[in-house]
Image (tube, rainbow over all chains, first blue to last red; front, side, top):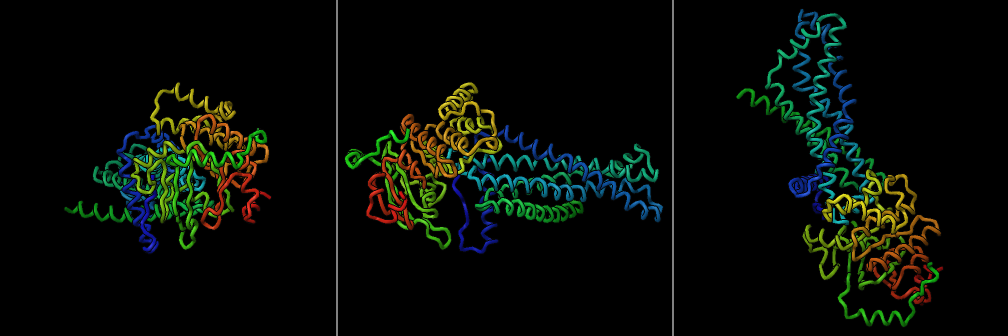
Length: 259
Length: 264
């Protein structure tokens, strides 16, 4: 694939944005090209999704557990302990779950993609793929971005559910709720409008994590140092994108909710 | 073996020039310039590669040898000058045209560039399934085994690249490139980092494969034994331009001190 790059007369940050737009265009063009790499997509879904279950699951569980432990004493003062399951459910599913899991995935997945592609670039594997007449964008980039876009929402849903489990354990230490009562209260307080925007925004988070990881890795420099730089800047940029997208999503949700 | 191969003499060279002078060269580079930032790597490089020829390019590190062959393969774009492969200007080709042209070009990278996440067999099958769109598993397996047999590593088919030695990686890299039956081979320092015995084996393998598949090759090397074994003609690149051309013997006895220094 011919290297596309904006001219070097622009400032670095502007040139970087231009390159990202061009990279996005290259990605978009290659999604619908013939010879889609289904096997590689499944392999990436396994690596990105299945292999992240442990980290995401523990993070979600502890998130709910700690949140409950921290809030029960305060809620008790107001005689509102019965609202703890609702509070945990709404805050985890609407906001904290997606953001924390997306940030965790930025650390695990974006860095891994950035380092893997960066190392392939440094060891000329991407050049070898290109010069053989194969399409490295289709094989390496399209599959990883789509796998991230599919897997991050699923991981978030899993983490949300486990966070409720953690919340139950946290509240049950003081013997406040039975399992059925806890989950009844938690789910009763949730509406479809809580879940849908949350899932939609995690799709964008997943896309951003995959895209940034691939962009940083694919465009890394030469030399082993570049691999570290690619991994690091993938995490930083992906985390930043998650926060920015979350702010946009919060604003959009608020506007839509009041109209 | 290497020593048994006659090194082309002056007469042979004249014959080559006369007979191939009328033919359209396989690769023709004219006044190639390429800079990276303020560093001008190629200043005015011109050369031709004729059909069936093994052209060795010598030069100190950082003189632009790899840059020149990357321009030929379309991995880099020159700033000025022309880089013509089979009559097509590489810089002007569309993505699809470039991909078609690359089917005719094989590139052996210095590091062999094997795909880390795939076994040796999968490495070789990769271009067959992605570029030639082959789907018959048994046919792919047969081709992979045949090519591995050619490079003497049939038993390595299920190994991962990390389990291979430097020489084995080069052989597998060569096999992966040749499985596409390219018409042009570009070798980027094929023997660098190898011990003298393995280096000689790889050089001989390059020569054998060239005879078997009748490729035209550009071989970039610092290894004079490799140059002696493989070259029909040699060029010396210095300070961004080709400064000398001739057979191994001619350059060994060149008047130019710098050219002679490669042979010491």
